[in-house]
Length: 405
Ligand SMILES: Cc1ncc(COP(=O)(O)O)c(C=O)c1O
Image (cartoon, rainbow, N blue to C red; front, side):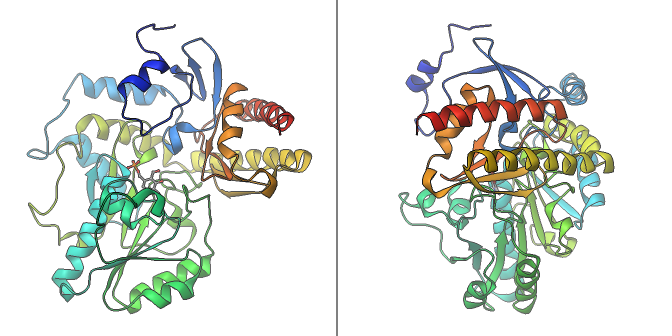
């Protein structure tokens, strides 16, 4: 399986050094198992960072891709295409939204959402209504607008002047939002669970309070469901657990289940402010991406599949809680559905990445969310046997890691 022409050493020679990938190079995946160049097998609890909702090489997705690949690849938005129309119809039928704008990544969907919110407010109320309020530790992508809206200065500092009229409140702290919001606020944006910020779940009162403040000040409520969307939490979208409906929702990651696609969803009254020529993308709504996403959507948006996410959450929680108690390494296990975080005990502060490397050595892929949280975002249909075997490997990783403390 080894390909001498593509080595990890070469990566460092030819890549911009913005990533530091693991030393092994995966070459093959099937379901929730992955193999590297040396033939070593891993159980995949990372899911490509909450992307591979149906694991690797799901036959319905490879069939959809092959069928579309033999039919029509790309047109641009000078033309529409059948898979895009079908997917948009399904997304609107299943959610609060009436209209869809397709993009290629979460950041791009958010960029569209923020531009739409600004344009809507400007058209309806005047140009003074431009403030966007987001939350500290929030993450919305890496374009300059979205990273500036994100609440992690470490990601947005150091690139010169930032886009203006962006402020950050404290997540789960309604008073901090109340202190910032006014009639000049055009939008409040949040993740229904903060993912990159450490798997932080808001209270229902907080979400209801945010909605009420938005309504009082004619500000749009934007839910960034890039990580929480498409079944990840056990419902199609995270907002569906809460009864709090956003005005704009962004979705990416699991939407294409591994094929790059994203979407911004909204109502007709808001969407009409993006008239022809105001926003666009060459690749957004590409037929290959939409065909795969439609096949994934048909499988994921089923009651039995979504119920299976909650069953698997229970297995992860039980297993991780046992490890937390036995080894005293985690203070809590949190999240919803298959977006799970295990918080390291204070004495291991800053070592989540190191534990993740030990896990990789033990044959299980996981992620971090910040320096102190180990994150698990596996396939929504990961076999239960793979969960127990993966947790056994993770236990070995903990033992080896503790041995060097
Ligand atoms: C909540 C959230 N929004 C936006 C993004 C950015 O998505 P992308 O990397 O596809 O641009 C991410 C990625 O991790 C995310 O978790």
